[in-house]
Amino acid sequence: MTADPAAAEHIAPTPDSPVLDDIDARPGSTASLLRTLVGLYLRRLGGWISAADLVALAGDLGIPTAQARTGITRLKQKGLLLAERRHAIGYRLNPDAATMLERGDRRIFEVREMTDADRWCLISFSIPESARSIRHQLRRRLQWIGAGVVSPALWICPGHLRDEVLQIVAELDARAWVTTFLADTPVPPRTLPEAAAEWWDLEALRDEHLAFQRSIAALPEGSFAAYVQLIDSWRTLPYLDPGLPPALLPAEWPGGRSHREFARLSGAHADAAWRHVCGVVSSAPLTEPATTS
Image 1: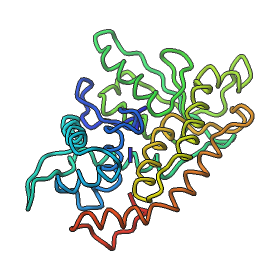
Image 2 (image 1 turned 90 degrees about the vertical axis):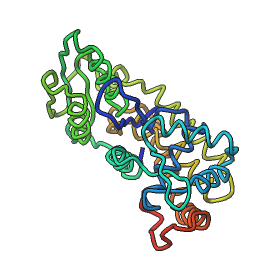
Image 3 (image 1 turned 45 degrees about the vertical axis):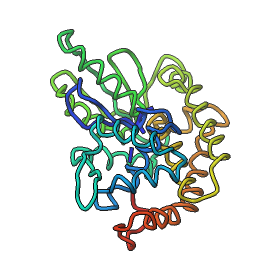
């Protein structure tokens, strides 16, 4: 699962299509909580849920009924949900969203951090003015996956993100204008930590980690609401934070504590949260493991 900030994934490949990504909505907002709820559970529920059950689960997150219905309508407009009546009025997951959600799962639950010996991916592009909307989308989506800006047409990210870069380029049909390289440690005209502070906004990223740490201090007591809010607060961070190697980061970097707290709280609440969903949704597969999202 995804975001966005927003992981930052979108469903339709065309630059001007509606997008839904992991940083499309402010964490804690109705739109973001519903996005997280759907991303966590709808696939495990078989890809469909009744409108009544979805609204009930939203209510367990503290979202009033009218507000939940409005938020669900927006998820339909974004292309994540499709209306479908079965034994009741309900919604199914848009099949086109599967890749987006699987990509989000990897980011959220399989956090990767670079070591000082890992390779980098460099992204060089020269896109004509006639395709400026694609250029704008490329820059926006590279920023969404945590790439840094060496210069306007040269971006950098951890080597393990290269497949995501290539997928973005393919979805935007920008292959003719983009070249990627795998490279060893860059040699900038200043120290690597100084260069990293220019290529990424590390102060803003520090603030995001500290905001996450503050948010988990205020999680509700019930495991379902606590777990959904935990994921909602966390899911943007693995996109915004590329997982830079220790040598590039300032002293007392808060990222390690964020990762440890996320793992601890996720382990404490995931199973009970899934049991709660099964209790609300009568067709839920009770044998489904709660740690799979």
